[in-house]
Image 1 (cartoon, rainbow, N blue to C red):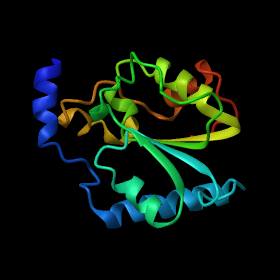
Image 2 (image 1 turned 180 degrees about the horizontal axis):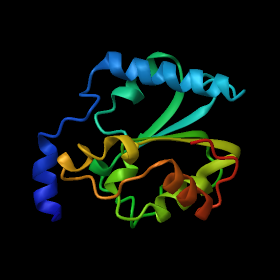
Image 3 (image 1 turned 30 degrees about the horizontal axis):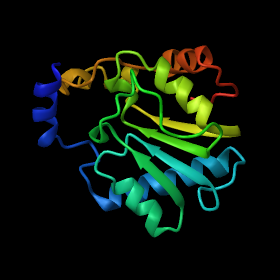
Image 4 (image 1 turned 90 degrees about the vertical axis):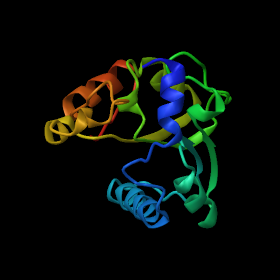
Length: 167
């Protein structure tokens, strides 16, 4: 989609989570449960990046909970397929990447950048539709360009040096 047409479309774009605080509180709680299930520390006390922060609702929930969080989104002019992330190496304990990867033709650069900015033993949490279940509606969003299922997501993570992946 051309940049101008995409910008116009995104002005009125509503996400699945529809800027509702309660949805983002649910995501926050789910992420903490996921971390606990995998015997990892919760978000509190970690340096977190909300990559592709969109309406900033998740970011705001984290701020309200006392999380040390940064955010960046395409609306700031960064292109996740072409640009380096403006953070130093090993800056974050956790990167949250919600509903973004399916909008990228190639996720290789941004994944290599996430790998670079994560601290050793850092965690990336990617939330994306599972194409195996969402195939009927996936392309109803004209900005969805690359579907993932657990196998393809695992492979793209492995290609970009991520180990111990749980998908």
